[in-house]
Structure formats: structure tokens, C-alpha cells
Image (cartoon, rainbow, N blue to C red; front, side, top):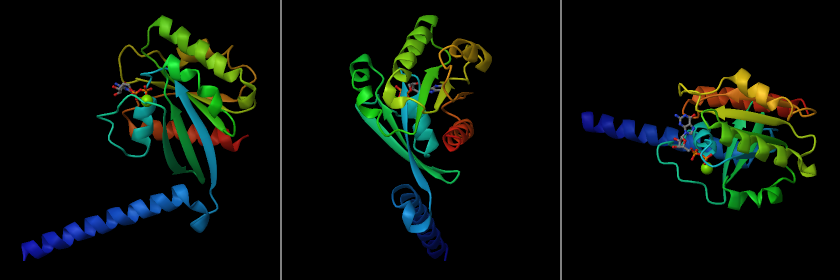
Length: 202
Ligand SMILES: Nc1nc2c(ncn2[C@@H]2O[C@H](COP(=O)(O)OP(=O)(O)O)[C@@H](O)[C@H]2O)c(=O)[nH]1
Ligand SMILES: [Mg+2]
């Protein structure tokens, strides 16, 4: 009898997982079948090791334990707050940064990820990189969400400290900053809600 019950439970779980995957597929790739969700393209940039892949994996419920360095790009699609966000992460090494500008066209928003525990020198490097990205005319008028990661670490800079560093750079840009741990799903979802608000206010 318990064998039958186990078999039933296994089939039920498999069926539920299958249905969830179908629903996710429809919302992400064929939203017009069931919903009128608009799709928004977001570019996710930042220096190598800032936490881009980890936070994107966390966002869609993937395993965050064995994240490999991003070679080329990585795309995650997420239905949220009546939008479908298609988020493209580009590798952050200087070799790959040379190609970033090829991906600016047609993007609705920018997500720029910074490690809150970086050395001063790397924070400066990160700010210079962001300045260079925002200076590109293809991104003019696009909102920018800065995400500070590694908030869970004791040496993390505070949101106020980061705002101070960013203020001059972000003049004339619709922007917000969220500090979070890329390992905390709730934190990341709150940051994404801020991103959807920035996009909606365009
Ligand atoms: N403690 C902690 N570790 C993080 C956080 N974000 C990323 N990491 C770790 O930082 C490393 C680099 O992350 P990764 O997502 O590959 O960075 P990327 O190069 O920007 O894609 C990985 O070992 C992650 O586990 C965070 O918020 N907190
Ligand atoms: Mg990566």
C-alpha cells in the first residue's frame, strides 16, 4: 500500500513540477498566449566577481553553489509585476568589456552590479566603468539600477556611503540603488521590484 502511495506522490510531484515549468515557459517566452505582459530588455553589467551571475541565478531559483565565470553572456527571463524582464548579463573582464557597447541598442534599462566589499581601488574602477557605460548615447534616457552585493559581509559599505559616491555620476539619470546579498532571494526580488518601478516610470 505504501508503495502505491509513494508512486502516487512521485507522479504528483513530477506533474506539479512539469506544470510549473510550462507556466514559466509560457510567461517568459510566449506571454502573448495568455497575458498582455510586455517584455523589457535589461542589460546587467559590472566588474568580474561583483555577483551578477549569482543574483540572476537566485532570481530564477537556480542553484547558486557552482556558478562558473561568465564567458560571453547569460540570459535569464522573469515574469514580475505585470512585466516580463529579459535580463542579459555580459562578462565583466576587460577583454569582454570592449564588446559591451554592441549590446546597448534596444535595452530598456541598465542594472549595474558592484561588490560592496571591494577595495577602494576596485570601487573607483567600477565607478569609472559605469561612467563610461552611461556616456554611450545608445543608453541615453534609460533608467539605471545599481545593485550593491555582499551586504551579508561585515565589511560591506552602506547604502548611504554608496549613494555619496554615485551622486555626481548619476546626475540627469533616473536611478536607484539597492544593497543586498545575492544569496538572499527576498533581497534580490525587492531589488527587481525597484527595477520594474524605474522601467514603469519611463
Ligand atoms: N557572501 C556573498 N557572496 C557573493 C554575493 N554575490 C556573489 N557572491 C560570490 O561572489 C563570487 C562571484 O560571483 P559571480 O556571480 O560569479 O560574479 P560575476 O562575475 O559578477 O557574475 C561567487 O563565489 C559568489 O558566490 C553576495 O551577495 N554575498
Ligand atoms: Mg558572471
